[in-house]
Amino acid sequence: KRIKGLTGRRKIPPGYAMFFPRCGAIHTFFMSTAIDVVMTDRSERVVYIKEAMAPFKLAWCARAGNTYEMAAFSAGKAGIKKGMFLSRKGGV
Image (cartoon, rainbow, N blue to C red; front, side):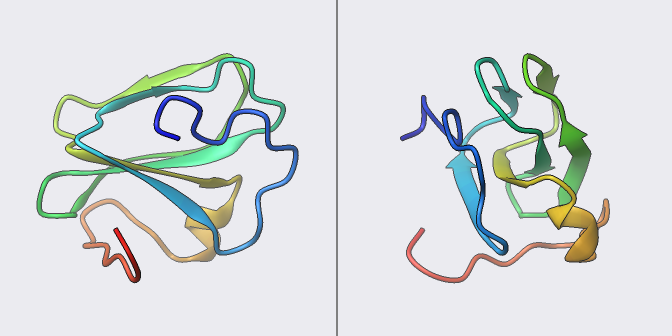
């Protein structure tokens, strides 16, 4: 799952995010849709946000400890901003 991520999905459900622990760099190679990328430090403080990252791009952040991938424009709709803390609900 970590290697594949959201690759191959044509549609990402609203409210769905994929979490990658210990990850500070991602790519959107071979993706068919844009995604939002949110990276946090180890304490889950948001340090990087890229909205609507197009297919075949790279993103990285030296301060990132974790990465979230979600549908394009989801981060903004959820009110996610740099400096805020994220809380994961569920089984991660």
